[in-house]
Image (cartoon, rainbow, N blue to C red):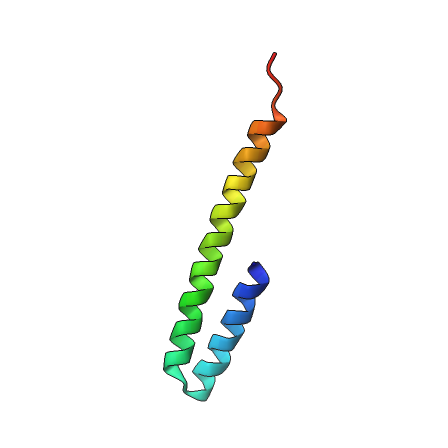
Length: 57
């Protein structure tokens, strides 16, 4: 997922340099959304991994 974020950021930078403000803005918003989804999925995975890894004594 983080590779998608980098891809959309590169698209946004290129579009911004070429003067396509609408495309650049949309690409930045998509990159932000994917980044936050990736962070949330990572945190959920970490919590589930910690919960499963513990053994009850």
